[in-house]
Length: 204
Image 1 (cartoon, one colour):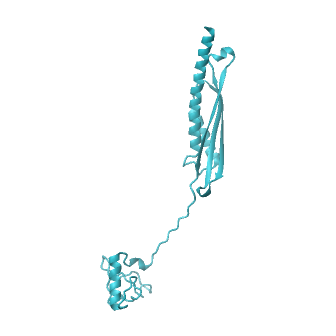
Image 2: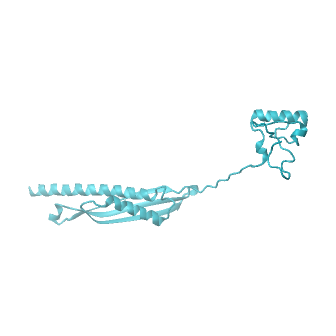
Image 3: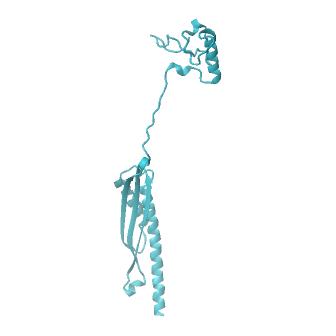
């Protein structure tokens, strides 16, 4: 009976240690992921390490039967080509699971331990260039029908028999009798006086 009793007791202690290790493994996973979270990936290694430690502590606090818990967080940064810096976080731990029955045989605790690894890359630096054309040419026709109309009127008056889609040969719309207008009935072709002194709008 005595061997069977101690065997059952050790089984209970072992199962308790396994449960504690499972909880700590989950805490290590959460801690490692916290250090490579999108909101943390651009922070310093020191800040990321503090976040991992805080997460592990929050997840492991209050676990009964746990002693001698030691947590180590290691962060390694390496270049990852065009993807920027690759951060690898390793959270490892060791602890003691207190035995309820094993202490009778001078086995007061079981040693448990584990680790979790997570990695993520910083987003690459990308330069964006925006070109804005604020010249009056933006008023020119941009549809096939509009370009055909511009080509038609310039071909009939100034560049016979060839028209110009970009009004290269147009000078003064009223003088040249070229009236290509927009929805507001305003001329959309340019004139040499557009850039002149006092000109404020491309209307005639």
